[in-house]
Image (cartoon, rainbow, N blue to C red; front, side, top):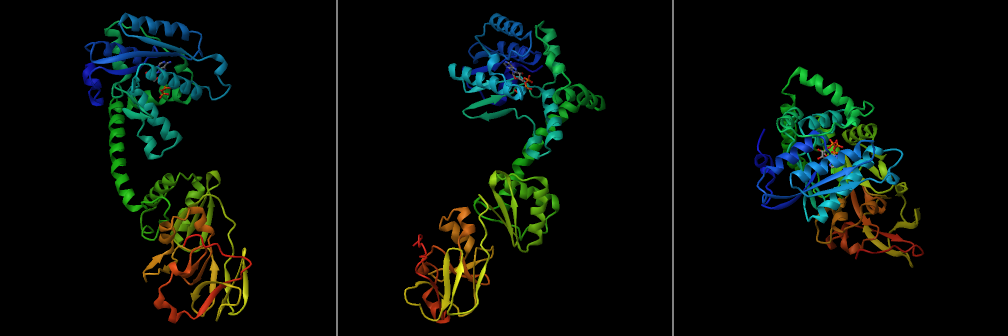
Length: 442
Ligand SMILES: Nc1ncnc2c1ncn2[C@@H]1O[C@H](COP(=O)(O)OP(=O)(O)OP(=O)(O)O)[C@@H](O)[C@H]1O
């Protein structure tokens, strides 16, 4: 068994740092408490915290056992209890855990500690990895528990994570420590306990090194994910409000595409079912047409011509209207709009446009416009620069000839067009005055 100083060394705890030590009375936390008591008294300022969930008849006695053992080691103890009145009918395990962590946070605050130590060990880690494999399989989850994790202002550290339960039992025996066996751990109605009972022994029988291999797997995976994250950042848009451009990704292997899509969706905090996920991938790879997909919380994904965007809610899409004939008015949503050879009296000038049938519609991925300084810009980029909110980008109307946009609803015409263009733009796009265009982005 490594010394207490060796076990805490990776966490770089300052001399005398206040630390809350969570002790349940099980062998793991009783061993950790004993180990830490062997440190020089000034090394850490420990407070033992023990919580009675009141879920088993023996729990109060176990808490007393923890208090007695801590006191015998000269450690201050704080004891908490979960009132029965607060205990829900269902979701008991999760609620118990939450009550326990609330208590640990209170103890940390009362003892000015920023660190909470728990006694999770290598067997716990193997169970966690197996459990997550069964439940999720997503790579970040497969890392299991990290030796150190940030929890708001607090840091939770697990100095025993590399040690087997067997070695902890041996330590307890060698030092004649008392501890209790949590009989709820034997309750095979809980999935975790079934893994502990069946899968873990089976794996140890295959190879006793499985705990060390799990630790290696977890730390290698965490490292690979760190590297992958750098690569993914380079491949995905910097700004989550930008579209995900799939055009360069269609040749990637399906598994790579799936990972890229998942990462983008995670960034956008969009959740979709596996079925929708594969439909989105097919739509992106087809790079044709526009498809919308419902995501959780009323959000939608829009795959259009190889670009993926997310919108907050599904705006009723306006059908595109072709201004086929010059000199007459067309109704597009709330607007009455038309193409004329000169501005009709009482009408509002929107833009100088080519004398050809224009389409009035919402945006498409390859839309481009020419700015007043003569530069061409993707409409997508223009919307970002103008700080037009994402959902609004989906509903703003544009007048376009193919991908070339001549007018954007709400944008003053002089922002969009170079003077030198006017000689080839022979018609005017006009708005009937009764429905005035709101020019909000002068
Ligand atoms: N009743 C308790 N009082 C104080 N600390 C506890 C209590 N129960 C658990 N702990 C702390 O949490 C660690 C893990 O315990 P256990 O494996 O029973 O919990 P878990 O529910 O599996 O873990 P998690 O804390 O991740 O939910 C223990 O080693 C101990 O440090």
